[in-house]
Length: 571
Image (cartoon, rainbow, N blue to C red; front, side, top):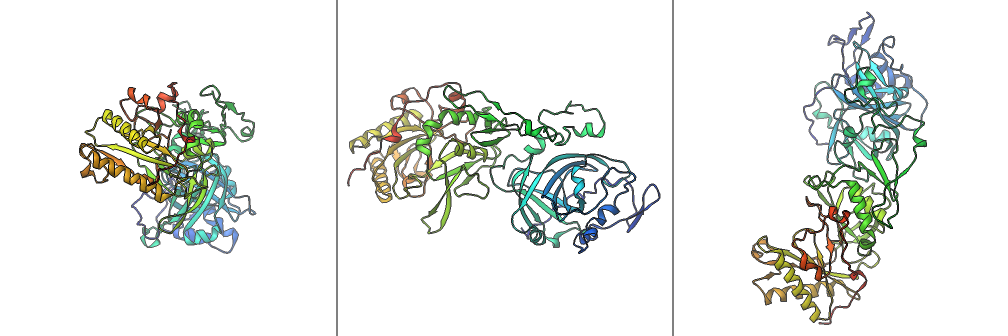
């Protein structure tokens, strides 16, 4: 990050209303003198060996006869508070403050915090503030430094990763937040000093690190519009009429002292026999806790075209969990994550990341390259929902389990049709493969991929990777040789025109295939659905089953092939 160029960004002056001269000193409206420090001088004063000097800049900028802000006084080491204050000065911004050594280290975040790990928000370092400032909410009067409305927008505690003083010095400060709104792993990164503007501002970047609390970029600031202290809007704090009527916004946290008394309510059961799910408002009404997993912004729609929300996805996985887990449990996974939903940037995650919750299990695997990495798997519904909270829209699994990595327990033949091939021809191809496998004494089952084709799945026992991958390759190549006008076993797109690619490559060690009942990152919110051979007669698309269809009560096809392993024929 040291080579990152600094963008041309607006200077945050905290709403300076008094037109002080551009020199070192000025005069307040009451005639008293005030010393104007450059940001360079301000930051230098923070490093003084004298604790009292840490707040000299803060005190010099304020006339405490006019403002209700608390006078600056260094306090004994506290419990690691952090606060965020929404500040409508010359420009609206969010003041992010961390308690350290008896003061609040402070940064002005121009656009507020983002939950998207891919976004870095400019954070301009400002003068240290007293710890008592963490309780301040109100209006700074016109003519004062920072004139404007201040809301106590978030509060909690922070835990640094390692020595925070060394992190500040190095320009890389990593920490965990336990706030009412900001949670999980975060990082502040100082931008290269050689690129700083002539005003000597110390520019940093605030970034959310990838963990279970990551999410949509502006969901925090868009969702939370009221004070964590009083429940008031910015308009109400300023004493102005609130046009939106949000003086007690329903999504605003309850005042301190009532949070512990917030009662859990019970969500409706999605179907008979499904365990009830406790909903925890945590003061905001912006999250639910289901099977011990906190689901933030449950009404946000990862599938906007289909109108499917995170709450709907929770209900879907609860509905199918008993059938999905026998296929999914303990299988190393590749996760397709779409933090902003379908249609936005998605990415593939194969390895565990810092901050993953305990419900997502880890297993160390020596890969084909010889490198050793931590992979992830799940054991229960809590693990599935923890992945959902991370923005996972697809689960792709190894052909083996974590406890028996060298013993593949399934084969998958993925029928991937050229766009010119009708789905009816894909169904015929799947049945042909079933019959040819039957000739080898092997039973197989079909699964709608939720994408374009059908997977023909063979549960296995007693095989190793060379045997499984070797059989799959020979089978696919023989099929293509016998019916070259219909099939190809070559991956190249040029070889697929008018034909079906029989993808056997997923049967190599370390490669994956989409798991039964997984959602797919498709606009329709389709799912990978195991079906019976007879069921295929009435199906005209690989995306015939969707989250909405399942939740509307569509019967789940009766399949039981996860518990029917068989041995490969000897060749």
